[in-house]
Amino acid sequence: MRMRAAVLEEFGQPLVVQELELAEPRAGEVLVRLVACGVCHTDMYTASGVDPSGYAPTVLGHEGAGVVEAVGEDVTDLRVGDHVVTLFSPQCRECEHCLSPKTNICLAIREQQGKGYLPDSTARLSRPGGEPIRHFMGTSTFAEYTVMPQIALAKVSPDAPLDRACLFACGLSTGLGAAMFTAKVEAGSTVVVFGAGMVGLGAVAGARLQGAERIVCVDLSPQRLEMASHQGATDVLIGGPDTVAAILEMTGGFGADYTIEATGLVAVMRQAVESARMGWGLATICGVAGKGETLDVIPRYLITGRRLAGSSFGGVKGRDQVPQLVQRYLDGDIDVDAFLSHRITLDEVNTGFDLMHAQDGIRSVIDFG
Ligand SMILES: NC(=O)c1ccc[n+]([C@@H]2O[C@H](COP(=O)([O-])OP(=O)(O)OC[C@H]3O[C@@H](n4cnc5c(N)ncnc54)[C@H](O)[C@@H]3O)[C@@H](O)[C@H]2O)c1
Ligand SMILES: [Zn+2]
Ligand SMILES: [Zn+2]
Image (tube, rainbow, N blue to C red):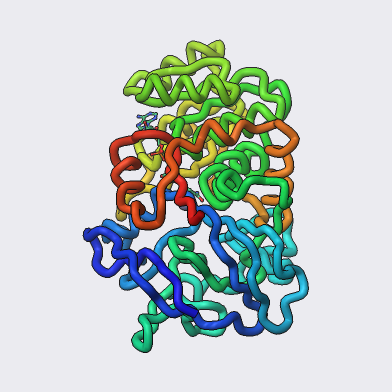
């Protein structure tokens, strides 16, 4: 079939919206008609060419939600008409990692996905009558349609508006999950969240859902801190070199039970470690640091009982837990509307990058109409 998609032709250049060919789903694959797709930092990061694992040409986009249009052979879990959220972090339910409750990092299709191919090592995307185009993050959702493996699609309630549901495909679930599934924040505890973008605000909401008593959010932007208060932060702080001292002062000199980093800055990651509580504080890192950067930790902080964890997609097992998180939104537990700041068309996708660059709003969402 023919469809329109935003192609990263060359790093550092605007995406080019054009007609592409999309082949039919093969065994285990599903054709999805996108209804909405958020614009995330990872898309912009790859488009800039800074990501060492990036490739071009490719169709970017990974925060998608849509409707199943057709299924290939051996697709047992999804039917035409189902509402789905795309998963850059799949869940095969069979590999060693999927069978373990300790991780959400599925091993089934990692290698092929990283190279830009579907699980059988080929692409469904191509230029009309011409060269194949690689898939991005196994999703390529800056497009009217996509073909994805069924293990990378979460079936969600048809009651959830898809322009809200798409935010659960990346940033929001990452933040919620970091607090709920990686840190497993306990009721009554003190949590510090560094960063009040999509991920940090999700972590604030996740900490609230876990019953945290005190939630401190740190950011540079007073507007974003206001949003953090709305999502459940009990205290807010403007970040800076004295943040650790300020948090120690707020916590009787000990530090917080849980700290969650959502900035991508290694200096802030260090603050997250140093403001975790002596004895048992757990620092959870969500941010993606720049190429070659390293995290400086004085070992004494760890020996005295602080722990450090990393979190990919918030530790969320996508097919099982994204539908549950969407249900919590439908139950009124999470205000997702507050995150949706701009609606744009596919042709305006580069405007989405500009808005993100200017820190205008939390999420721009492409509405495919
Ligand atoms: N682990 C994952 O699976 C995963 C998934 C999605 C995004 N991410 C990463 O998470 C990070 C956050 O993503 P986002 O979309 O929320 O980004 P964002 O840019 O919208 O938010 C980052 C926030 O950090 C704030 N900040 C900057 N300096 C600060 C400081 N010194 N102290 C406190 N706050 C400071 C900024 O003001 C901004 O509000 C990024 O690095 C992103 O790449 C990781
Ligand atoms: Zn993302
Ligand atoms: Zn798996």
